[in-house]
Amino acid sequence: ETVLTQSPGTLSLSPGEGATLSCRASQSVSRSFLAWYQQRPGQAPRLLVYGASSRATGIPDRFSGSGSGTDFTLTISRLEPEDFAVYYCQQYGTSPLTFGPGTKVDIK
Amino acid sequence: QLQLQESGPGLVKPSETLSLTCTVSGGSISTSPYYWAWIRQSPGKGLEWIGSFYYTGRFYYNPSLESRVTMSADTSKNRFFLQLTSVTAADTAVYFCARQRNGWEFDYWGQGTLVTVSS
Image (cartoon, rainbow over all chains, first blue to last red; front, side):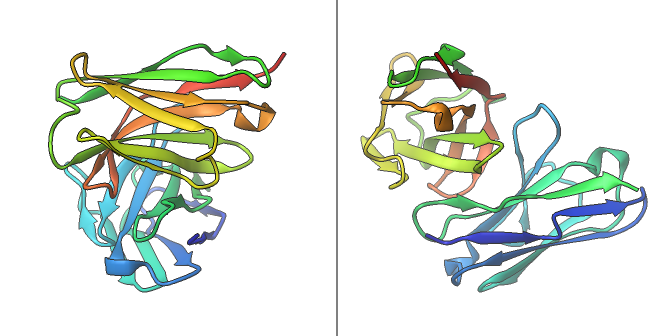
């Protein structure tokens, strides 16, 4: 099973600042089959990025994904009030599909 | 707009079977190249993929749950189902159904339903 580790656990930032979230895999994620999701309280996760760097439909361009192999990054260029949420990475290169434990981005 | 809605009992007794339904509207579960999945979220284990299926009859389960999980579908009613047997308190979670592109990422989710296992 591919274990995903996310860091930091919590990121405290102000609106307008940039955020860098990390996701590290216990083994190489084949074909960069990695996605990022945003989850706001009481809501389902929302797909932000797939294939490590492709934005999902309707996702603002302040969100960008990068990385390959075992190290992946989600960058939010300028935080908007609605971006304060929990972010999860998920790999689908090997079965079982697995998710990371999440990074909470909260307001400083 | 595609919508998914989970339904089922919110309370299940230990050792019994958890049964949930996902009703899909705005699109067909018999459409290529989409898979349909169940995922759960608990405070202790985070997000956990339970299993996925393709309308032609292929099913994939998480090995950690495979011995207790059965997924099925009613394509005529555009619904799919989850059964989880011999539940314990560890199965208490919010259960989501979701659409999965090519068996990969999850692009549409239901709102989730909380299932509590307790006597």
